[in-house]
Image (cartoon, rainbow, N blue to C red):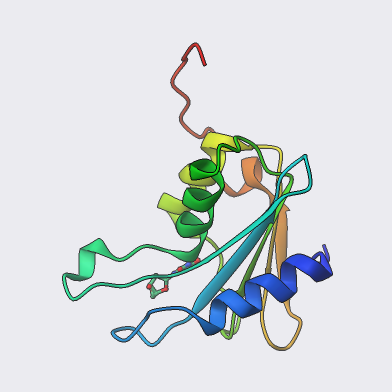
Length: 131
Ligand code: THU
């Protein structure tokens, strides 16, 4: 597994913009849609700790808010060893849109954890809907 260079650059830029005064743990993410659009996001914490949002969820929110409904690959950048891997809640959020997308988690040393969304979240939940 290797991170797409453009997505890695965007994820690093988002990492630098993370709002994480409580945990001090920055995460940035970036994804690409089938039409070639790219979206990025960072974790955004809150004084009411439970209201914090992970970088992956910020990124999916940006994508979906722009009207996009699918992504092909997402890169998650952190400066952690091993690299931060999406939390359980984020796995479900990723699964909603693209179970077949690739996930590449990478850190400042180039260490990688990669796989398909469906492998990060086996038996993810789906609700049948018409649109
Ligand atoms: N976090 C993410 O943004 N993504 C991950 O993959 C792991 C955790 C954030 C949530 C919180 O702001 C901080 O990292 C520490 O948990």
